[in-house]
Length: 70
Image (tube, rainbow, N blue to C red; front, side, top):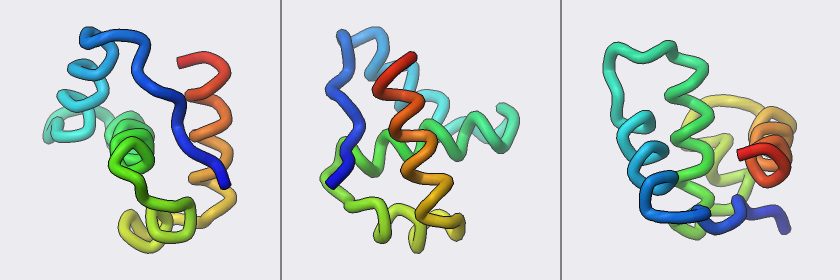
């Protein structure tokens, strides 16, 4: 199973939370933040993909990227 790593601190957590709920940010950035948030909430890749209407491959790719680069 693949999960997003824990936030490195409260600043990172707040930044992801804010971006996940943003209405005027670029849609791709909001989607990435929502993927991380849903993973932090305990959702699996397939459930995140279904919730957001994207593919499992995309969810896995963004989780790997977040885990490696933040």
